Amino acid sequence: MTATLEAPVPTAIDAAVRLTGVRKSFGHGTRAVTALDGIDLTVAPGEFVCLLGASGCGKTTVLNLIAKLDKPSAGSIELTTTRPAVMFQEAALMPWLTAARNIELPLRLAGVKRAERQAKTLELLELVRLGGVGDKRPHELSGGMRQRVALARALASAISGNGGKASSLLLMDEPFSALDAITRDVLQGELLRVWKATGTAVVFVTHDVREAVRLGQRVVLLSSKPGRVVQEWDVDGLSQTAESARIDEINARLREVISSHAAA
Amino acid sequence: MPQHETKLREDEAAVEAGLDALDTPTGTTRGAARRDLLRQVLAPIVALVAIVGLWQFLWSRAIWPEFQLPAPLAVWDQIQTLIDSGQVWEFLWVSVHRAVIGFLIALAVATPLGLLLAKVRLFRAAFGPLISGLQSLPSVAWVPAAVLWFGLTDATIYAVVLLGAVPSIANGLVAGIDQIPPILPRVGKVLGAGRIDNARFILLPAALPGYLAGMKQGWAFSWRSLMAAELIAQSPQLGFGLGQYLHNGMSLSDMSMVMAGIALIFFVGVGIELLLFRPLEKSVLKSRGLAGTH
Image (cartoon, rainbow over all chains, first blue to last red; front, side):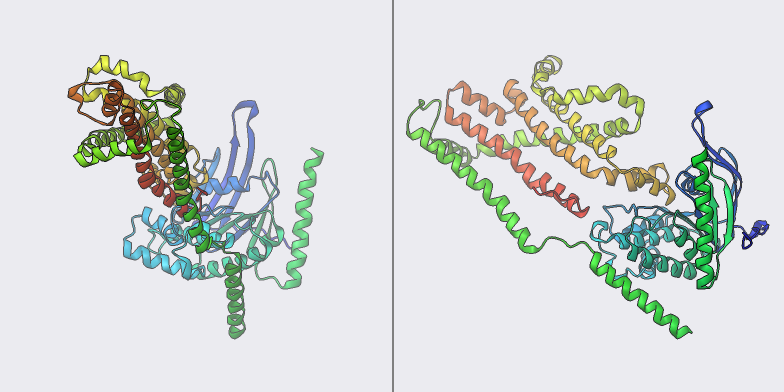
């Protein structure tokens, strides 16, 4: 508990996205279910934040709200970035398009010229180390490769049309949870490398404490039903021993939060 | 330190490349594909030869009179005469161009209809059962009605063809759209696609396999309906197609002519499916990793 940091009060400029008192309920009247109950969260440009919580804590709802796939019932969401890019648990590539074409799709939707599109696509393929397989279709790729194509596509949508001026935001909804352990491990390294190379802000949803601590600079724990921010930890640049101590601490707190539901 | 980091990065890249090589799904080998092709071409030919052989055998036993079961050779001669006199091209032209035009009109009508059915819930609730029901109504049942509406004109023929083909194509498109994984339009939305872009870049390509299956069935229904219409609606105004040829054979009690007509109708219907729709469907499915075994 001593290691908990108070989130600094940021000014308007140093927030990529700011959620203030965000509530979300589904359904109407007495049967309405409150998924999120007053979420305050600020993500700085270029920051890597992990949202952690058990199932039913509304992690995915938070991402959907930021991505504008859904509207909050109350509260406000301010975005200073370009349209946030989203990566889902499944790669969700278009099966009729090649890997390169999939990456190109958001650029095409943004009306980027063909030559520029193709150059950018090649660059992104290289970035996720898939230079040789641009012509392959999704079904010819392994799960890890598909997820890397999805990452490149998300990056393409984050940078399309901003001319490199506005900062970008990448929303990731448990993107590696369907992969085997070795692939997941490699892709986590890959993501960190890409994050450092692009300087994009990342909101990463996971239920895996180890993953959250390894990847994030800050870990935000949400409670379940309704989702509230329980606690935050700064996990940036920890030594190996400090990291494992932090993992144990967060794990303990997560278990506590989950156990509290059995009593209710 | 930087050297150490570069080394680490190279290691990561090597592990990743190894995983990619190990995990990439492997396709079928070339030899297997050739064996498949052989089986697909050879098996139906052998079956056809066997059927003709059986036919020849039954004919040689003279169980039925000649006007009920002619010799295979007599039917072949009949077709040969048609080809020699050049008449066959006339019949084929009359029938096939009607079927193709009818099919294209059906496609133009069924596509917006299918989109409406798939996307407007009230429209679907109201007209969905009707259009599914129409699919199981034999289109020959429309011939008397069409004759009374339009007289013995081309309009009658096209009306019957449309009523046969439109429901199939529309239902195929609806099935195709229904089967789109809901994540794909969501992805389209987060990638910045508006309603129209979403339809153009996501929904229509995603629905293509179902749409093509509907078209294939729609073609079969067009051809079938056309033959029903040509067979029943007889008039000099309507020209002389395969259906009329078949009808003539019946009027003349010339069984070899009737069989020749049936054979021609069969080969046109199957031929267009095999030469056009089957390869199209196959290439679409294959490019998505959905290739069936047939």
